[in-house]
Amino acid sequence: MTDILADPHLLPAELRPYLDALVRRSRTVCGRHLTSVFAVGSVALADYRHGRSDVDVVIVVAPSLPAQALRELAESLAHSSLPCPAAGLELVVYNSDFIAAPSGAAGYLMDLNTGPLLPNRVSFDPADSSAFWYVIDRSIAHETGRLLYGTPVRQVVAAPSRRDVHAALLASVREHAGGEGHLGDNRVLNGCRAVAFCRTGRWLAKREAAQMIAKSEEHFAPLIDTALRSFEHPRTAALALPTTDVRAFLAWVGDRVDEAATRTVGGRPRD
Image 1 (cartoon, rainbow, N blue to C red):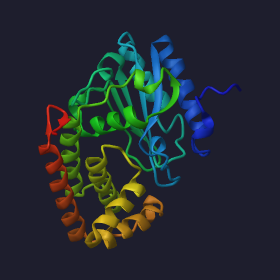
Image 2 (cartoon, rainbow, N blue to C red):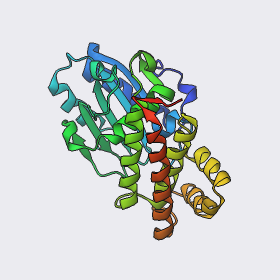
Image 3 (cartoon, rainbow, N blue to C red):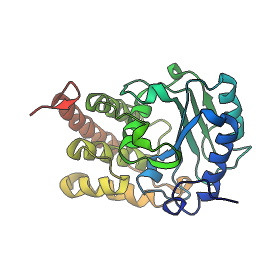
């Protein structure tokens, strides 16, 4: 069978057959309306860990895609139809007109979560979801998105404004501070990545960001080290992190993001 993936050698070997099948099914359902398919998240940041990481995928389609095709796509890519070898698939479909302009909204046409360790969920209404997840993913996509098929990422995806990214990061910190539905290590490592972004203006892999923050913030180093060791385990064997310490760390993260946000005016850092 002819390769359909762009640069398959750059993808984790465990995911290549799955992503190939995902792209093929997307082409079958969407036809000429399909613009691009690309990976974000851990695959894009070269930090995918088999047995721990999700596969995060964005599909961009023409505005003329029939609504029924979205339901067909959800059925075709569900874990029961196409078994996901990772912890789960988090897939978002966008209208090409929407994603071509900066936005702080969720704005998706379809959001699909499926896989062995994810609760199956599909939404066709962006009002169902908190916008911050999608803003962060689009920011990562513009910077580091890994093309799987179609038009190159930066020709398709506009970067959200810095102001919208900071607002999304603050919302993310509040979500993780609640703790419900999130592993302790992921709460800490996402916090490290948020602060690293505020300091550098770039998206780093979770482990790289954690090492940066642990080096500069020695009082948090033991907690971050435990989170990193936990991150080496499958999700079902994650280590327990002290709740009080995690909350204190996330409060500190929120303050750092808030400081970065106050230095931003109209989406641009102040001089």
